[in-house]
Length: 431
Image (cartoon, rainbow, N blue to C red; front, side, top):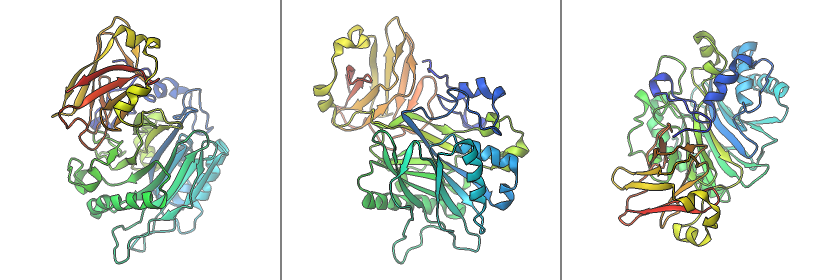
């Protein structure tokens, strides 16, 4: 399997991977890049015109001291300009000037950005704020931002999640976002309570198609068992886009603290591209300067502005699929589903033809359900097989991960359908 944009294989111990669509581009242009100028070579920006890039970044004790470091602020502002919506955590500044200084830096590179910021939160004298910085050329703020109102008589969060809704300026993407920096000592309890936050978001903004929970969850190592499936946030309703194999810390630790978790009908918008931005490699920083910026790497996920997945059941899709005669892969039968395992939750796809096939935006769908996985930019080479796993993980050359959080192929009689980007049925496979 050859990815069109060239994925790099890295395991978590090597600080994770910058996923497909970023890695090779970064290596090619880094020598000519200047974060001080804010110069973006063609193709370097994470989001294409029909995509939006969202994510979260714990900037580690962001206050007047960090704001006085011009080099750090140049790097931070440049990272922010790679997003269309980014949630910033751990703002510790009672003066309120640090965020203004940061936005002044951002404005010099791209004047389209605006921000909203939470109240100062925390049970102790050490208060923090969260902020959303967003590109007004790509997205609109669609609701009045608010802090999650904890139910009367409860106090599940040290710092309550900050909630806001955003929609794309073009297209139909709309989602409710909730960002949080959990308390490390109570990370498990706070992560579990995020399902209540998601429920609240769907109640107050029922027209939004998905809820995106993101931030520094402290969701790994000594604070949280990332492999424990008993957490309510690990139920089948939620998809963890940042896999357990990534390292989101810049120091010697090897932990996936930062996460992006989605509830709702997100697959028709999700590009399949999510990961970690290794800004130390991006800007060729030494370890000291890297840690001056933050002890966390920012995480991101990319979404289409228009729905490109398939809604409804596979039976509906059969009736509305396109003209297979226009589909070269359909007529040649060169791409086939060659396996479906209900127990281990995977499906295999093989190119049996003599030519490579572009499967970008092709979908795998389960019969009798609305489950749909959209493949990111990729080429399936002649004779090669890829495996799509239901579980969480990060995509590699020949392995893709649904990150579904639940079993997809769990019923006898399930049928997998493979469709091209125009909705043409390529192949089906019954268990």
